[in-house]
Image 1: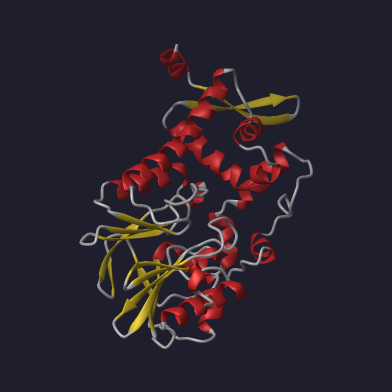
Image 2: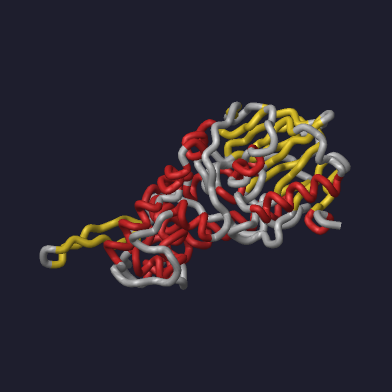
Length: 339
């Protein structure tokens, strides 16, 4: 039956609508709850006909298609999580559309996502250190919204009618969710936790892969802080936005933390051999020119900021004739402790 292959039953009153793949672009799980005589959603997926059809077919399969939509909670304002709102709102009128207050400007004006994705930084770094062609559509002329559209996961403009912050609660059917602000991947990213059911809707901070992160979205420090925050909770079940249900919360949180911290170690090891430029470090961390442009540039920048704040490394300005350049080196204190 159409829709049956995409529906994963978590509980009788909670289902996952699963996309064909956990990887970008059409990749985010949609969670749908029985909510009294209606239904409520956590995220709605991509702005594509295929994604909307999958959602509607899943509701038909569940025989929930006639129920009114009470709440739509958005983990953050990225196209694979809220792009489907434009199609959805053409046919229904939800009671509440809920988003963290920090992400509201990005929902209202999707062009602003270039700032939270740190695309200006990508272009600045690319034009400074790399003036060469690269694969794909990324490069100095990169347009983020056009890029989403070209991949079939377009972004829409949306005005939520409810906002939340850390410490708020949201009742969804039989669930009482506490709102946790979990930045790193997005400035206003939220995760929802029901302490009685020991259930975490993690959004993008946990799942099939480690989500990219950028300084303007919280960076490596913000991401690690978010992991510490949810790591203090008693969790039996994690429902991620990408990938399958997670039953070992401690392992998932620790493995994600280690993957982020491993990039610190790669940078430190590289600098033990001598100073490196941003481009050299980017090439060490990421193989593909397209990935080095994004998300490599903001990921690397967030680690450099973290390591400089910790006084593990320092940045130097070099003058070669009339040209200025930057390089990074280990702090003397760190060199001494590592001998």
